[in-house]
Length: 267
Ligand SMILES: [Mg+2]
Image 1 (cartoon, protein in one colour):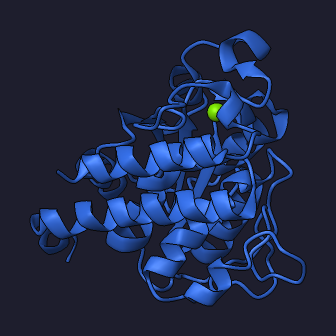
Image 2 (cartoon, rainbow, N blue to C red):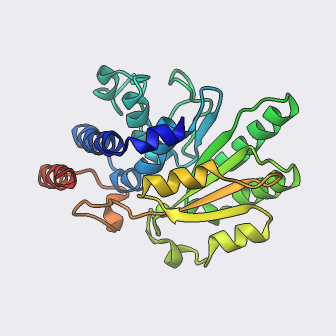
């Protein structure tokens, strides 16, 4: 099934460009920040939801501030209505700036308080194993999150319980809220450190959907899987790699320039 989907390359790339445009528009119209980190993980979220996950699988967005990318993926699957996107971050919306576990199809937990997704996901993976379910759990984290001890505790737990039905993706864009990750709390080679804890590690270009798909389709029996996504905050947009795209909303000029850049990708 996945191979068939991947062989049809043009439609997925067209789908990605339409997702980027709609994400940019939604953030601009809502006057909401976090666009940079949403762009950096949109490819992986779209790959997961369109090419990898089965209906019984579950996705935990540990970096809850990238809720927009998740909403766009669900919209592109027909699970969220266009009318819902127009209410993004407004009062009484189904779609707040960080995802709520009440009401959004397929979402089990409210997330956004960072460092909790890996533990929630490891618990789900253990529960699935104990009842003999084929369910696979996917958890998307930021790179800054791995400065939190709770993430490492979850990894210890997952390795101990041999949770090979758990895949943790790390959106390694090198930036976090207040600057470069290596300047905030320095750690080098997070993948190597996670391997030392006993996880199976793969590192791929997080903007290459074929590479991301390939990594997500492989794993090691008896070990949790980690896919380190080498990504760029605000990829292909004029604020590429700019930490201001973490918090600041888009101006009209920035939005229009972003649209032109994305539309140029399809030419
Ligand atoms: Mg980051």
